[in-house]
Image 1: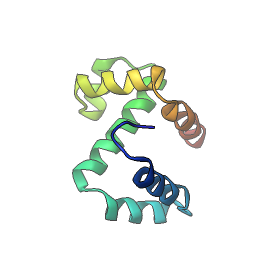
Image 2: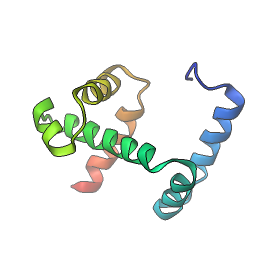
Image 3: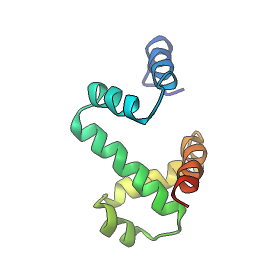
Length: 98
């Protein structure tokens, strides 16, 4: 668990996310929960993770997403050495686009 979130507040957030029924409900929840810039940043990170998983290089990802090299580097580090979240989700997204 992140050292930045106390267990009680983070558990409520995680339970809320897990309770989401479908994509439309998720969209509504995240639009209420997050600012537009937070949503854009999260969406960009997912795009970066997918492109890294496909084997694109930093300059190609920068061109396609506009993400900074720092963001690309951070996502890459998390993709390979993080808590496993990207490792769990990116293959599912890959399967959806096949």
